Image 1 (cartoon, rainbow, N blue to C red):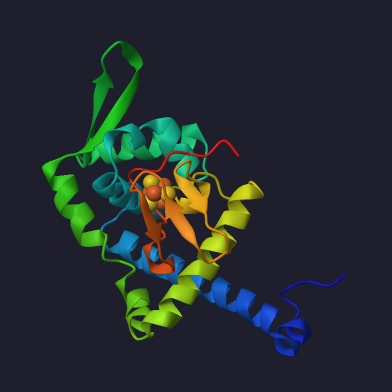
Image 2 (spheres, rainbow, N blue to C red):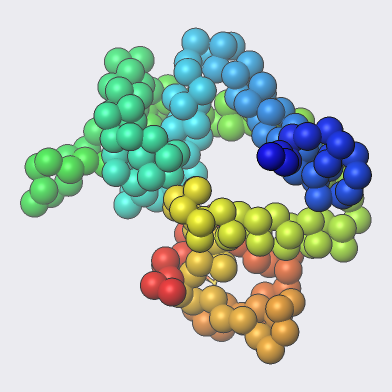
Length: 203
Ligand code: SF4
């Protein structure tokens, strides 16, 4: 049986090398995340939740949403939340008219820590910044296509990207994009991966 991790396949064509390269980059994320976690005596998922809470609006700061966002169970995310509460990094606000549901907020201590740790992946930004604008646009477009495919295949859940948004419209060719909400054409560099105005398309 062939496998994408077979070295003969890797070295024979470009597809396997791209796959292996994506795996190395994801390994770099894991290493950087792990280093940050150790530095502040947090688990990797605690770091990810703090950074997520720092940058996302209240409707996304609920247990069910976080469980989907990080592809983990509600029980696991509830444990993470309890632990962050014990460390006085977050607090819960019960939603009016729904006492079983709550939104998480960062405490001032949690906010300061989240700002510091949100820089954990900056090492990966350096080589990206070295690319030309056209290389970046093409790289972004291809990554968005991979993420969209993985989302449609049910491998990764929530995506707040243009390709899954109700407001998104394809132009006549595959490189032409339009946002009906912003009422504007989007160039490839304008395509969003995490848009606050995103509404999941039913298609
Ligand atoms: S609302 Fe945001 S995600 Fe949706 S199409 Fe417009 S820019 Fe893209």
